[in-house]
Length: 252
Length: 252
DNA sequence: CGTAAACTTGACCCTTTTCAAAGCCCGTGG
DNA sequence: CCACGGGCTTTGAAAAGGGTCAAGTTTACG
Image 1 (cartoon, rainbow over the protein chains, first blue to last red):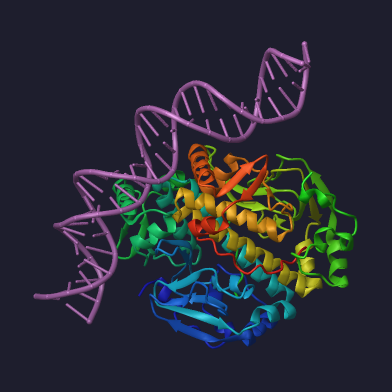
Image 2: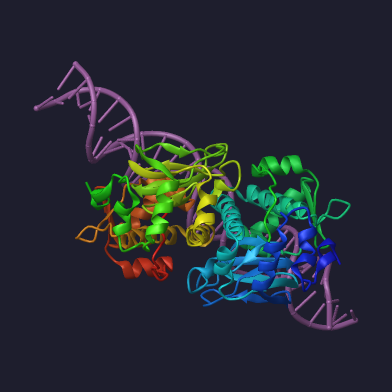
């Protein structure tokens, strides 16, 4: 039971939402909260390893991840897979396909997850009822795109050690912002090396060797499903990871 | 003077906008048009090879590309560059940094371009005045993200020939939708091999050799700044390029 | 305690990169 | 009209980073 498990069950009312108490998110007005709650069709517990949204699936719903880890990815016909980004609490899933009839990517849960599920047409109503909420949705879309931008730079131009360093720093910082680090500074890290390989565009074997090399250099420690960053300076330098100012994120 | 040059100068009034006459875009109501026009601070001609938005630039404006080609990219400190996506008429630039104080990517013009420039705070006002326009902005953001998603799959998991085939098909189709193909089916193609290499995460040399091999197989022809797709079937199969339904795009 | 999944490691191979140089295209200026 | 020069393309050869194959080994867990 890690820090993320502190609030695993999505409460009935949004004002009781555990996530909203996190300092990582902006606060919504009571009226906005009410709108969100009304457009929400409920919450859904999804066990680890489930495909929540399938590639080419029509009419996928809109979700907010409340607790747990998930991945967004695309595949090629022979099974090659590219992870586009990892979803952490507060991230939305299914935004893209609100605008096209089929989903162009898939979403799988990595750990057991809780999602907030929205009604069909929730998105459009959100815009109509509160311009602010519409604006927030765009904010979320823009932030997700900037994540993918960074990942594209990583896959396209960084060397294997740079890629691995980038991924570790990126996830670590995101977890930090969400307040999910343990007191000893370690972070929950429920993904395996295959996930890392698929996220970085590397083979499993080479991911393993690179990970190992960085660990032997004393830069990080990955064990027991937890990540410890032992030398953030060097890792950040290798990756050219510069944290953008940790703005507060809106929450749907 | 190619097809894209048919409407190179952005007219004073949005209702006279040449782009809006293209069947590729949704039509906006008179009221929406009026709002857009009011929030527009003017148009701007930008010569080829100009950096419109710099990486880490604060307070970049919001633009709509009216005519010409541009690129959005990120770089590493030693000069390695990854092109995130190409901008064609109707695409917006600078959306992401409306939400953070600095731009995390750069935008360069490839050809001479005309942009529609929006006022500071235009975005927020758009949402307030017409929910529909806010929704459209999110649509544009989501579409751009899906482009980047595809490019990430390309850079992360496709082989060199697959990457090149993908890029050619993708751009060709986008140009087709915009009605920019010549009568003979050829498309304007003002980018050089360095652009292609930077977009695909390949070296210039290998890009050249791969391009050459595909051309020798009779799949395409790239000369005189124009692209001809000679064997769309095979190119699409190599790339696993499946056109998503060409939805009409909104236009800001 | 046994089995499957995940992690490691070594050896070999191949795609892609790097380095180097030549050729081509075209606009500019003599 | 032709020489010059710079950017872009093309090619060859060598090197290397990363992929593939094939076992092991450890860990998680029922």
